[in-house]
Image 1 (cartoon, rainbow, N blue to C red):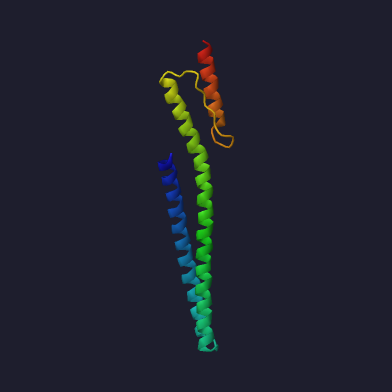
Image 2 (cartoon, one colour):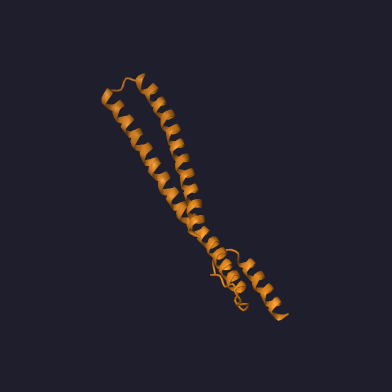
Length: 133
C-alpha cells in the first residue's frame, strides 16, 4: 500500500521539518539577540565578536543537520512500521478477494513481524469453522 505509506511518511517528514525550522529559528533569534546585546557591551575586539557570531551560526547549522538526521532515522523507522501494518492489510485483502472468487481453502499467512497477527488468526479460525460446516 505505497499510497498510504507515502502519505503518512510525507506528513511525518513535513511536520518534523517544520518543527526543526521553527525551533531553529527561535533558537537562533533568541541566542543571536542575546549574543549581540552581550558582545556590544563588552570590551572584546571586533574580530573576536565576529568569530563568536560565526561560531553561533555554525552551531545553529549543526543543530539543524542533527535534527534532519534524526528526522530521517525516524522516517525510516516509521516506514518499516507502516510497511508491517500496510503489508498485513494488503495480504488480508488479497486473501479475501481470492476466497470471494471461489478459493475457500485460502488462509492468511503473515510474516512473523507483521502487525495484526491476531486478526489473521481470527480470520483463519472463522474460515476453518465455516469450511467445517
